[in-house]
Each structure stands twice: as C-alpha cells, then as structure tokens.
Image (cartoon, rainbow, N blue to C red; front, side, top):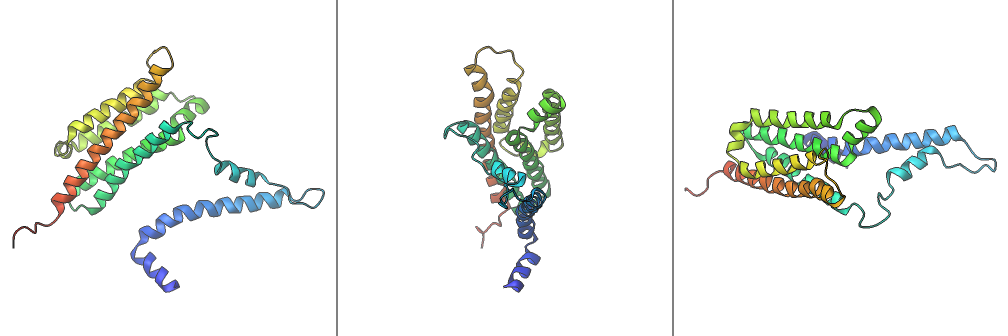
Length: 225
C-alpha cells in the first residue's frame, strides 16, 4: 500500500500538493490547539479547561448564518465565481497551444484573485483596519485586467469577446455602484449585487464557449482515413 501511494505521488505530484494544502493547515491547527491546551492547564477540579484553540476551531467551522436564507444570493454569486475559474484551469491543462493556454491560466488566476477578495472581504478589511482606500484596490484589479487584455488581445479576438465585454461592463458597474451616491436601499443592492451575479453568468458562458472551442480545435482530426 505504501509503495502504491509512493508511486501515485511520484507520478502525480499534483495529487500530493493538493492534499498537502489541506493536511498542513489542519496539522498546524491541531498543534496550536494542543499547545494552547497545555499552556492553559487544568481547572481547579482537575478538569481540562476549554482552551482558546478549541474556541478558534469552533469559530472556524461554525455555520456562517443563523437564518438559512441569509446571504444566499451572495453565496450563489461566490459559487458561480468558481465555474469560469475551473473552466479556465481545466481547459488550459488540456491544450497544447501555448498562447491560448497561457491566456486561460492568467485569466483564471485573475478571476481566482477576485473570488478570494470577494469571499474573504479583503478590500473591506484593508479599508477598515488599515485605512487603505477601496478605490486603490479596485484600481489595482482594473490595472491587472487591462494588462491581461493588452497582452492577449489577439487571443481574445479569437474568443466570443462580446460576452466578455458584457461581463466586464456588468462587473465594472457592480464595483462602481459602491461609490455612486444612490439613495435608498433596494436600488444600491440590485446595482451592486444583481449586476455582479448577471456579469458572472455571462462570464461563465464566455469561459465555457472559449474553453469548449479551444479543446475541440485541439483534438486530432479523425474524419479523414
């Protein structure tokens, strides 16, 4: 069994790498809990006190919402984020065309960064804790997007770029809604979150069509004898 695992890891190092990305954080968390338990010691009745490590573990794995439908549209948006990212990376791993493969890898990485920021509220945290302007973070992401579009513009023209333009416009409107002086509650929410979800749907369609076309074209022609 050990030989089989060694052979698997040797020929499929990605399997080992992905498993380690899950195992190592859990190992560090376990070590922290054990250490905090030892440092806290026991209570007066020789009963082991619940350490700060246990409290941290409970917090990390607690349900994020007390109401089942609270934040459901935000969660749906974050799930939809994953589709174009997965399509980019998966299709890039199948392609032999260097430029198209690089475009999908760069574009997928860019989308992954946006998803991480959106899921973990990095821009908001930096704004409230370090007073970093949100417009600065949005500017950095915009610059990265423009850089990718400038470098791969020829490749982008071979894809259904109209969908990409629609998705980009909707996502830009979603980000801009955060700065627009719009009164009320419903309108700002629909402009920011509604346009984001619609943009992500179009982005998924764009990545699906682009990936499908690229993979089909890379297949060997078996129509001729």
